[in-house]
Image (cartoon, rainbow, N blue to C red; front, side):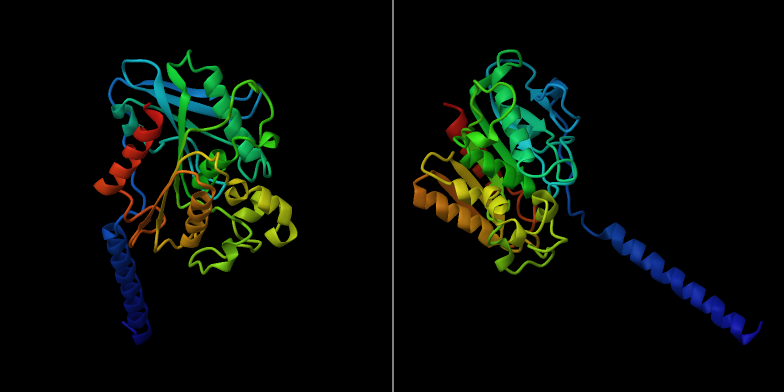
Amino acid sequence: MQRSQVLTYARILLSLSVVLACSSRAADAPKKHHEPPPPPEGARIYTNLAYVANGTDRQNLDIYLPATGKDFPVIVWIHGGGWSGNSKAKPEGLDFLRHGYALVSLNYRQSQHAKWPAQIMDCKAAIRWLRAHAKEYSLDGKHIGVWGWSSGGHMVAMLGVSGGVKEFDQGENLRYSSSVQAVGDWFGPTDFLTISKYPCESIRWGTKDSPETPLLGGLVSQNIEKARNASPTTYVSKHSAPFLILHGDKDPMVPLEQSQELADALKKAGAPVEYHVIVGGGHGQPGFDTPEVEGWLYGFFDKYLKK
């Protein structure tokens, strides 16, 4: 065999060994995202319920109920995904059914479908629809809490502070309130006018490639009023819903200071707020699946929704 052929075969073997080694490391690497547990056995499930008449498939929701009972307080799960990804499928929080809650998971129009404020208008329309149909689906329409992560955290925070903002309430079921009684905001952006001031490992906020740019329809610097309109900190008052805010101090995507700003504003306004920094916590994992966090979560919603 010629020397050139030997070198070629050697390079091929070396490449294969590198690929195999990388594959092995990838297989051994811990998964960053866990798979939410399935609904409890016997759960009653209603899927793809339209909360906007003649709307799109992004304007529907799913309801999960315990096997027996009625008049359940409600937890509404709003998914994250940078306002442009994910869906209501496989929601977090199905274990709430074992604690006597109904869980609702909803879709809303994303930034590729419509610009702000379409997203908050959809979420408010869903809350009003739930109240309008509470008796039909065994829900306690007087006690509705919301919970979300990341951009879902932003959406639930907006719901928690904008109960009296009439411009966001448009469409059907307007005789019902879109206010919520408790908010679980986990590492959600809270102020688009300040978010780019803080160091962030994975996202350069305020640039053409950052996720709020398509949401707002342009750069924050060129859409100041819309950015203010989309920021939960804008609407904080003593009438804001009670908040449970969690944020990891190693979050590479949403600066910890965003949650600190919201918590400070709520405290200053006299609104109830519990704020926990997860030491070593990232953007969801690690650190958010501990018994301590679970205790905070259930304790918070029980306090405000089981009255």
